[in-house]
Image 1 (cartoon, helix red, strand yellow):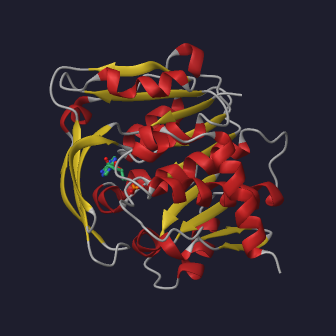
Image 2 (image 1 turned 180 degrees about the horizontal axis):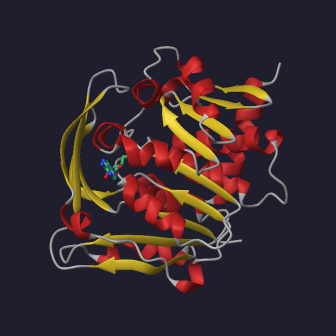
Amino acid sequence: MSILVVGSIALDTVETPHGKVKDALGGSALYFSAVASLFNPVNMVGVVGADFNLQSIDFLKKRSVNLDGLEQMGGETFRWGGRYHEDINLRDTLFTELNVFQDFRPTIPEHYQNDAFIFLANIDPELQLEVLAQLKKPRLVVLDTMNFWISGKPEALNRLISKIDVLIVNNEEIQQLTGKANIFAGAEELLQRGPQAIVIKKGEHGAVLNDPNGYFLAPAFPVSRVVDPTGAGDSFAGGFLGYLSTCPEINHEQLRKAVVYGSVAASFTVEDFSLNRLERLSKSDIDERVENYRNMICF
Ligand code: AMP
């Protein structure tokens, strides 16, 4: 069962208390695909500029990520810069250069249009709406976004939220989206807007699932050396939707397990800069950590 992702492919410049990388591989679609492809084949749609070295993502092809939907345009690749504080949960965006994304119109190749599991990764919500309109029979549509679009394109984002199944946000985003300081009140309000489930990522404090069956609270897998949290959210989504794509039926129990797979996937990403840890990650690494996790939360 293939998974479709449309999102950013980036060259990131990131500074954390553990060091700095410049023009390193990043972007929501890459982090997501690196994880989700450990569960099922992934079809990726995105754009890079003429300056992007396509060989740098060869490892994804080996993991059955289909890149037919990856366009290379003249101009520069999307670039993002961020700096993390000593408290690594806090980050400042230093710059967002849309570059080729400015003129990008996502075209979903015909052989992707019947995909059932869809991740609308963090890009312009107007583009995310265009993607949805091209899909024939999505079974589960998961949406991610970020503060840049919540403030920049609120109307498109609101339209989108009413059309999707699962919304993944962090605590700042939920407050920005709903105006509610209390994340649980925010989640309950968002559920009224159409999605079947809301997932709130709380960094080192774990994740919360809210759906009509109630709440599920998942602690983060303990990582004692967080080198670079960039992409943790997209890797979370990769584990979350990757796991769900293996389930014959999607219900509250499966959503709970998916949150655990998401949390575990994110715990690997943060152990190194960029996609470095994910390049070396295997499905059995994930399964082993899920088992450890189970032992840690059992009482
Ligand atoms: P996360 O840490 O999960 O929020 O994801 C960070 C990734 O999102 C980085 O690799 C960035 O390249 C990418 N990113 C940052 N800002 C944007 C944006 N406005 N649109 C799309 N992708 C972005």
